[in-house]
Amino acid sequence: MSKHAAIESADVAAERTIKAAEVVDRLTRWHDDFPTAGVRFADLTPVFADAEGFRAVVDCLAACAPDADLVAGVDARGFLLGAGVAASLGTGVLAIRKAGKLPPPVISREYSLEYGTAALEIPADGIELAGRRILLLDDVLATGGTLAAAAEIFKQAGAEVAAAAVVLELGFLGGRARQGDYPLTSIVQL
Image (cartoon, rainbow, N blue to C red; front, side, top):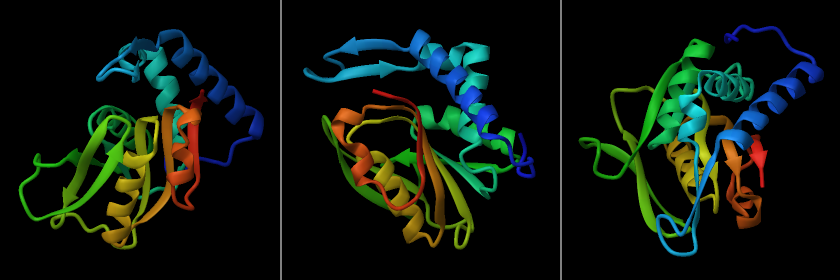
């Protein structure tokens, strides 16, 4: 798929999503009490290591905003997704880093997650973001703080989040309610 892909039918889109969801369901490894007690961690590494699985996920995520100007992936598994989707769409990719990984100046946003607090950053100069349409990607949507913080960073930079997408959404944690008015897609919802 490219930025200039033709509009596809709902049947084709549904078939692509079903294929991706099946591979995510089959290959995801679950770990209880990781990284802290009470958290159930979804390890998508086997999905990304499987050529067919990775391609299915990338195709599904790329369809969320085929007209995006830039793909942004959240540290760290979002980097893998972002690179694959950007290559598919013919755009650039921007890594949204954890605090302290980029030299200043940066645009930063602190947020809460299910097992603590963290901050995300992007470069404050060197990349023109004003007016650009961003496809925002992460692997898992849990409580929603990470994705919401990333979206706020781009809003502060003058960009528009055209859409956000994740591979796996843990709906019972309510993270979708913390998101902005951009379309949000998840391949698998639990």
